[in-house]
Length: 199
Image (cartoon, rainbow, N blue to C red; front, side, top):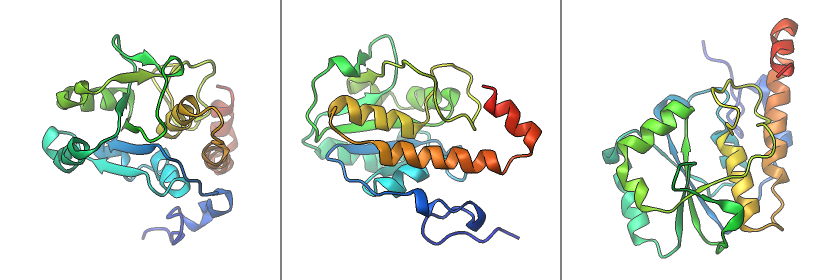
């Protein structure tokens, strides 16, 4: 039997985050290409992004055929489009000047899944790639990551929005993530919680 869910945030009632959600509007368009394995993941940060920034678009899939609708949409867009993904060819976001109405493409999944998405969708390489200057570890301590520079999709979005407009207040995003992390930690047995907090 499934646990009853909050009709607003769609998290289980015992883990409802509505009190921590402060909607915000941004000029930048956030589009997430999400690996199917992330859709129902309890620790998925994209769900939080959509609660805070309602205009966030999410396209679920793996292959180019799965993203046909997205590709058609981007082909008709009259805005600059950037792929947020670190590579040998990517530029540091903080050293680039942006228009606030840019479109940001974000890959949502583990490092392995995100890399697979990129390999299965070579059309993404037509867009200039950007990476972030990470001066601190991710605050998304409830998910294990294989790399020290790993960020949740929500964190990457918040940092990109700040890079585009340094005056942008991104605390609604970071506060929502902090609330999720706190809630998840509180629900863990003390010995398990200690392992995460020791990171």
